Length: 243
Image (tube, rainbow, N blue to C red; front, side, top):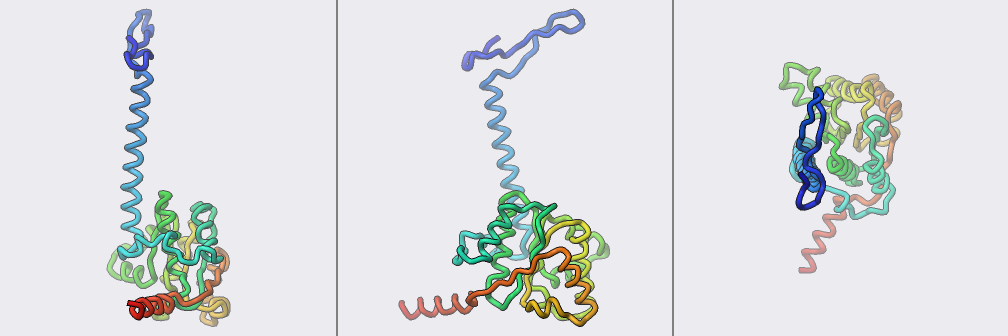
């Protein structure tokens, strides 16, 4: 039997134990239809996975919508570096990054853009802070499971390092998180208001262990420029004046 639409066979003959039998097969148009259905299913599956990953990646809904399309400084070095990082990202080979510099320079903004860019490509990422991790550890009975989860993400972003209080307990959490990523050869991005001198010349032993490990695995990227928060404030004030 041949298909009346594509005129390709819908059956074929096969010999089994010396007996000839007729077996059904998919004609050309049926195979094309099956491929289209498969592609449609895979697209829906990917979209659902991306939606779930984006929801789980951030603790707030605003970050889910922050992308490079909202970047008002696309020609700066940090913007180009961030875009290239997404373009060439490989969870097994990409380097870790430390974005450091003053407040309002856009460190967290570009880290979030990187996260959303990688989520769109199907990667599983997590944008968090030491305080958030500390709260999870405080409430759970299996702390090793929390650290295993941290190690499992394709990319981990640790935002605003040392914005929390400085203590041996917090330093131990920071070291464990970084060390877990290091031992599993997984990249991470850290944002911090610390200066290069504070990062490189810490006299505290607990901090020295942390930064020593970071220097082994990460590139330090200084983020410079106009304070974005002050710029937005000026723009808002000017908009009110011009009403």
